[in-house]
Image 1 (tube, one colour):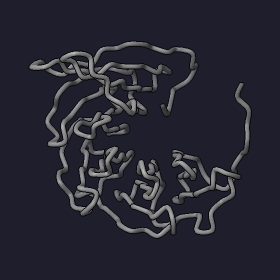
Image 2 (cartoon, one colour):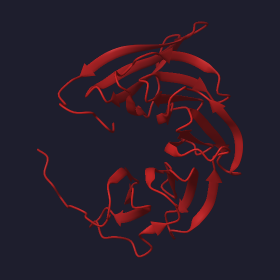
Image 3 (cartoon, one colour):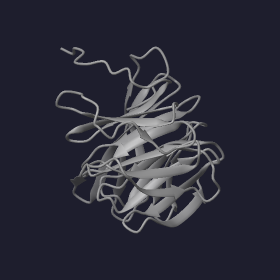
Length: 244
């Protein structure tokens, strides 16, 4: 059974995204701010709200260890915040200053990825905060991205509805055209790989404007190309599914 524990009403405009760490909840909004709460009692932390973006904030993510909080915005920047102090420790700007819609951090916090409205992704080395690549991956806005469990691959989703698998050199490994009619809205990978003989695979969830949630198996057999197989299509929603 599911029940409401708490309702938080501190943002002054549309809520864009939320993210959990082991002890914190972060939310971000079109009101240009992030807010951070203690999950023990959902009290707002003393340093909250976080203000640093010039326009609406579209996405927020914690690092796996919980020590870093990331946010990206229409202003074309990713801000890295300290979860302990609320201090902005780095501001990473998209080379073309294109509005950023989504960001993701590799499981080992080695790479930071951000998807932009101009169809590019920017990839930074996270420890040094230096830009590795900015590459075009779509003719449409990149609105979804996630890393594989090993952090050596990533998936992008765009408003045209395509899902694409890339390596960290931004070389295309597989494209699933029209995965979601009217556009992808989010994608998320399972936290672990599965090894079955000579085949390595992980599961990927995606959702879209078509009101569907889809579960995929992303796999590679030794010596073969990568493949993406649709495992389940969940159709209980009656409106666009915005997050998964």
